[in-house]
Length: 256
Ligand code: IPD
Image (cartoon, rainbow, N blue to C red; front, top):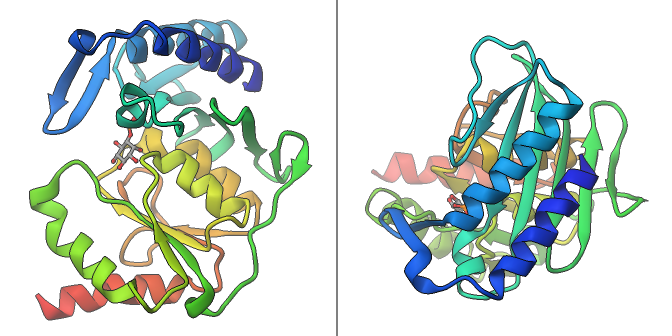
């Protein structure tokens, strides 16, 4: 899986030099795609199909399908497309293998930093061969948080503004990086203490969620429930500050 992610990453890097703005299409409001996302996806799908011929696919660009196969790959061939088309150095290839109940293995490859995060169920979490652990900070005033604002500004505006208003000055710092997969891996590696966003695709969080869990972190939906896997409202944390993040979201609901 790492080898496949590296191959796709090399492709993304080389195409970035020649991609022209005319080749970028707006799928939905502020949500972009180009031939690069689609070609990267086809490449990843063909390599994975060769590894596990009977598997299905759930992919961001929809170039392959999942029918009733017991195992399927969840793929984001370019997470951080907006960063990519702006030449901002923070984007990744994300590949997970799952069954009906859980993620079995996951790889998130940070193309610009040449950092490969990977995990398999029960096998720990790794970054370029080094074991990963979340950090154990429990003091929110020291915490570095990722608060991402998704594309759909109208729907998310009250939540996003509430979260920034709530944590600005309360926590150690707030970041927004434009790649959900890398942000969750930042929590897994102890760089962030927590991160949250709503409205993301399963392909954005599938691989990174296992990297986080195997690094000792916690991932839930906004209401704190653990059935995050098929949903897009995600709170990822080092575990110790998780309840504060869940509470911050539910405070908003009470105020509405
Ligand atoms: C997006 C990124 C971004 C997040 C969006 C995602 P994409 O994925 O992860 O950080 O805010 O919600 O859709 O479109 O670049 O694959």
